[in-house]
Image (cartoon, rainbow, N blue to C red; front, side, top):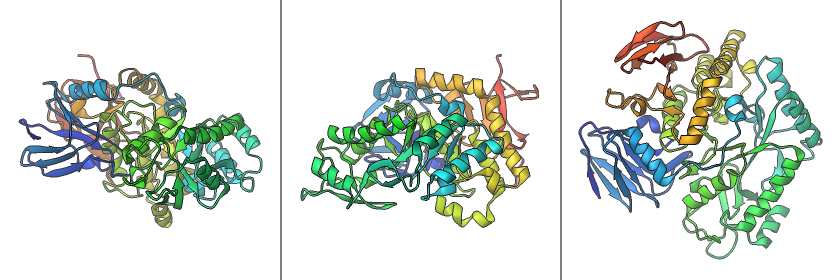
Length: 503
């Protein structure tokens, strides 16, 4: 199938990862393979245009942009609203990923998330988890959701606290609750080989197999493991029984890691005879039953009640690091995944963070906080009181206060997304079509009233802001005329914010 570009038509969507290169502009050459999610983040077989068209392929498709022509390989539906990017999104959402009755816990938007990963990596233990939690409060940061990351169990598939690392797990959780924290645990859909859990899962026939009928052993970032067959109801029951026991201890929710399509070969043998993309989506479907959840990898998860984190970012200023946060978050919204977290503040790629630990860029850390503070979920991991000088830590605390100041509006926008499916973080083109803002992706609309423009360049204290037509009010109540690009100054701990006024 061939589709000709219309005049000044731009195309959005597909992958979240790498969205700084989107949208595809007229005359640009680009190939987007949406037959399976090849990225470490979310993706969907959906492309949308600024002229109100969208393309959806239930089984995925290949898109090749050449000389103002789009060639599609695969079975797709092409719809034309004859409207705008917003019209295309709303129709695609209603037709292919409507939002359901399930809702995320409001604590996701109301409180910061604190993840123990950067501080403890694989060495999670009761003493240091409690120390991290107490340090949060001692350093005048608010209570929030505390995620205990990889390393709390003895091995994968045996989802019980390691007695050696957590001898008083129930009491620890009770203490965290008494302090005001919500507790979540990391897990994955793998089972460590040569363990009791592996032998049990093998004998229950709930593991993915090779074509020779033996359990498939998958190589992933932590080594080699067997994989649960998520298309088998018995596998889901086996896993849920373990998570039920954790919730009986007081655990509030779970971080569902891994599940990437790349860990599931086309040749795998499963009870449901599913594809790699379908296996990835089954992981999301399982996790959606928990109102406190987190996911990083997803395929066709639009409309689901999932907190979707951006993949681990390096500690740098590039379009792979801090300058990926806004483009990727905007892409999440236009693909029907509005409840996003822009990675862990300062960078969640732990090896890169460790390599930079003796030359940490404190300005970058603060700017990451300023970007995150008005995005749907704000997540810390590296302890800012440990890695920052006093004056820079104070700027990060100001980021948290900024979020608190806008909390009522943020919650309204969050609930609007639950009810309507509209993005929380919106492209300027989504709200203001036809004003030349198709390629603006370093500022955004939070809902339909608040324009947010963080500073994302090293050494800068001001930036260009593209103001749509109309009147815009700054925090000092200065009213600016829109329809132009202007330079505005920022202030520490606070992105540039302007309210759309009623004309």
